Amino acid sequence: MDPIRIAIVGIGKIARDQHVPAIRGNGAFSLAATVSPHDAGLDGVPHLASLDELLTQGPAVDAIALCTPPQVRYDLAAHALSRGIHVFLEKPPGATLAEVEALKAQAAKVDVSLFAAWHSRFAAGVAPARAWLSERRIDKVSIIWREDVRVWHPGQAWIWQPGGLGVFDPGINALSIATHILPRPFFLKDATLVLPENQAAPIAADLHFRDTAGAAIHMDLDWRQTGPQSWDIIVETDAGTLKLSQGGAVLHLPSGSDHGEDIEYAGLYARFASLIRGGHSDVDTAPLRLVADAFLRGRREATDAFHD
Figure 1 (cartoon, rainbow, N blue to C red):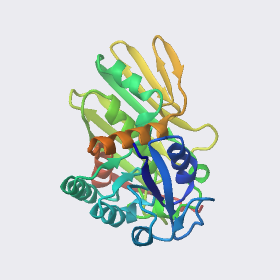
Figure 2: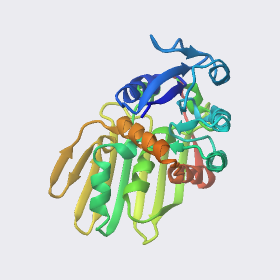
Figure 3: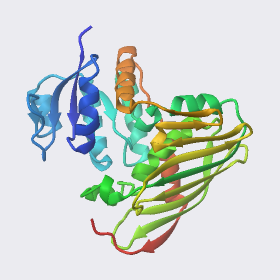
């Protein structure tokens, strides 16, 4: 079977660090091209300034991975789908729920695969955590996602603009795990969003959710953390406490701990290949819905200006 010819659209840090090695490590794909108006691309790989140039001048591609900021993603994805090209959406899948739903409907209409890729769901501890929790009563959940924005998102002005999500850009990773491992749906009850006086997106947030059986879920997001960073989900159950740490890479159970290898993006591309070969799509918007609800219902508090 011939490999799937894929182009990466948007060559930033995440594309270079994660997408390129994951594609090159998966025999189902061949990296056919890169696209960016601001980057010179990769040695030995055809590079185009725009998606229009790629689609009119070649090389031919079967799929694209969209690694652009979410604010510009809809038009690119819609254009690719209209040409029968499969689309991988880096998280978050779009700037709004409505545009993601429109892409989902378009992909179904033209029989092309669309994948909303939540990389944290493929962290080593997530699948066994989901299996363990499926047989437990959930009593309480705490999510602590605190990191230093200057370390992890330097110079990314788009992330502070409307649609860029601010601290929810990493926070949505936690929500992608929580919506996957917890056995019951949950919804927002209260939220406080802390916005720098010179930015349009929050630098911190405090959120209270409740699942459909009444279990409390608290989420603490903060981009002002220095020193040790925290990416933890703690679930108290009738059989003891489960903890996922290091963004889902390490699973702690009452019986012991396990630290698996980094397989997130390898898992994403294995899933994308399976979707394409099987003629299916996977567009779960649950994490983005919860973020949208936070912006819809959350109270705003101002804090000091942020300068990168």
